Image (cartoon, rainbow, N blue to C red; front, side, top):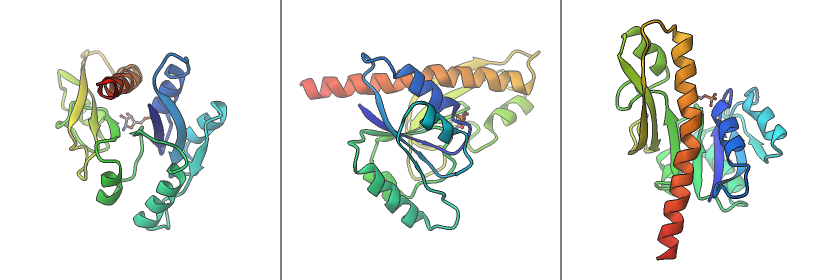
Length: 193
Ligand code: GRF
């Protein structure tokens, strides 16, 4: 199963996926990284892993022009799934339709609770007993798509916000590749029928 990774920031999920999909027996192959921020540390990962990378700043360009360039770039690879990992730009309904039910995102809360960009902080400030991580199919809304998998993180009252962030990211890094492998295996089953 071929994936294109999309990131805008640190890229710790990109790194986890690249690390975990290195072995030949893993049925998930990252073909490229698409990055919309020229300063994103994730770009260096592409160099480290010899992964082709499109850096196309989204500032100063219309959404439709940006997406048209990205689609043209992706057309050289046979991409099965687009995997958003800290990608901070909304995709248009047109782009989403192009990869219908084949764009995944990861979010640091138990959606539908705490959508948006401050989910970990909000759960912490509200002294939730548990929060977690959600992987879902991207639709035209913000963090609203069909949920594929969720994992819970129980909050320890002694944790700082940084402790909770570490725990959430640890779960994210375990979970994303597992979900991708599961999708690849389900795809193989369908093709075998
Ligand atoms: C993660 O917490 C992910 O859930 C959210 O953005 C963050 C990206 O972190 N969508 P990183 O860039 O993968 O380190």
